[in-house]
Image 1 (cartoon, rainbow over the protein chains, first blue to last red):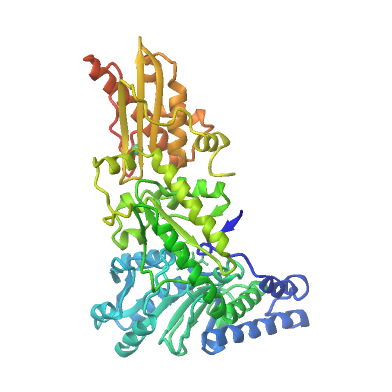
Image 2 (image 1 turned 135 degrees about the vertical axis):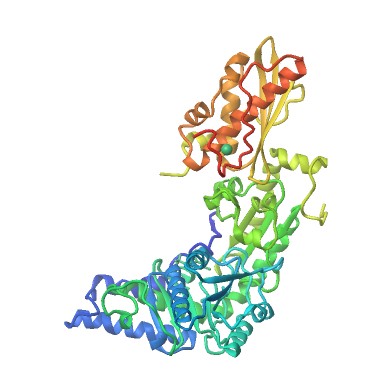
Length: 400
Length: 146
Ligand SMILES: Cc1ncc(COP(=O)(O)O)c(C=O)c1O
Ligand SMILES: [Zn+2]
């Protein structure tokens, strides 16, 4: 059995998105800035895509800038709000400790340039509240940037409430909605969102293509200087085919969302329930307020990379927040931010299932994870120390 | 290229000398759970020969493979050879490790040294080898084994 359970990393492109792209590679390959007809055909496509994307987000086409992906949109949003803030002498930015690195690293850079950055604590549930945001806002605050859905633990922030607080206080609100758009309802107007980032490859569109939404009237600063594309806000010949794929994938995801989630959420909960039966396992992130396809567990006494390799041998593609998979020495900053100790965070597993998953596949995952965890524990001196009492168990519930 | 060589994957999937050695007369451990790797080595030494050896490992794929390979390299060998085992030899026998995984081979070397040290201590003999570095697998700032 082959099960792709890493949709949080990227998704398989939908046929509709692929079909939407091909004509703009094979036939209408002209540069949208050119005057002849295959160029103008591409320009029309761009306009059309912009309109359709705007409709999905409930904004106007002029508020949409196409970017080279989610990271670029995050960087541009944050730099734009930071520069606008500095002009008014406001150099305080509020964010969370468990943002994606696309946000955290640009914030770190800004901190080095004199900005003050407050990172809110998502707590054990992995949810930042509007009250926390309200309490952190000062007269110097120029930007609140808080992710919509956490990419590792899938928790959903109360974005509409946070947006309302920011609107009331007159502070620009950006949300990294890369893991939300196409999966849960997003409405920039109703939710008081000033800026939003999304990436096509998280909802069955192409990689390297994203959107920055900026509410009319707010300044946008270039981070890629060049030609007059995107109203001069993002230099570079537009990736027309990818943008067409993005628009098609977004429409399709939004059309199918309700039905997909009706199926997906019960299967996610079945997976959570099944994995909870493994002794000394714990779900990361709130069980209720979480993305429809996200399951994230820690297992005591094992290490995540070996878990992933053995699951791969069983045909299951998943990810982990262990140090060995992050390529750094520390385990996932997200798991640490919700209070998981290092020892536990090394043994994490993220399964992000897609709407096409079956009950049979979910049961196969539960069985396979159970087998692999039991095997790795059987060879783990750390687990034996936990069992013999030489070291203390970290998860207090004794489900045995 | 894949992350790991075929040899690493083979030792990871089919570890040699896995488990507890009930009649071991030298037991050593290296690493710590905070950094995500612990290796435990069991030795049964008779007449200066490593008659039997086994391991248990908590860690990533290359940690399991490194301990498996390290036990293979010293099994049936004189104690002197085990004392001289280097992490480089382990990594080479595995057809190489990615740079950020070299510490796994270091832990294997350290765990074997700890087990040998334990053996000598139990025999009431001075340890003839080089002291283990005391590497805990937390490589931040560590320049011991470049
Ligand atoms: C929450 C979040 N933000 C930003 C990104 C970056 O998006 P991209 O890879 O398209 O640059 C990702 C994807 O990994 C993400 O999950
Ligand atoms: Zn080290």
